[in-house]
Length: 169
Image 1: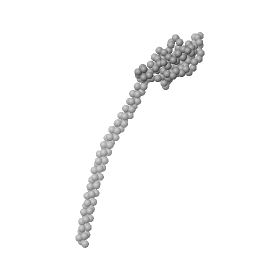
Image 2: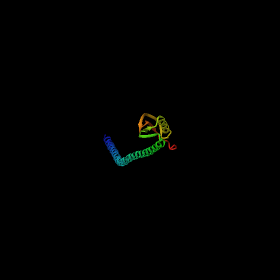
Image 3: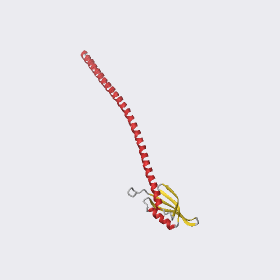
Image 4: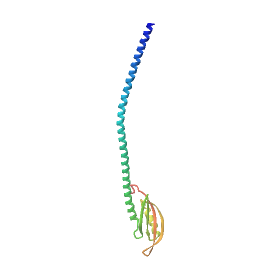
């Protein structure tokens, strides 16, 4: 019986020692993992700063791209306006048609003026639609108007403005 108790005590001591060593090993691994987590969190913080900087740069790039697109559009539209006025001036017969006003908005040009007669208005509309910059001439109104004692035709017409391709330009 004494042998069995001593053997049981030795087994308990060996078992307790083994469990203690095993627990110490686990604690050491846990501490090592905590250290790795701390190192990784520090790296993550530096990467978060880089990610925030990248997002900031991407937003700035988007803003710059929008500005560049707006500048290109303004450049195209300003050139288009000059071309439209040039086409209008070259296609308006100065002895038969006199313009009063022009209104340009959202791809449309509204022209009001005075002409000698309805045939002149029709011919003028045909000349304008022959231009690569105008399409769909629509006569909104035509009425008799007395100017300096002469019976003339007041008119208002609407044209759709088109951007010709570079080969036509």
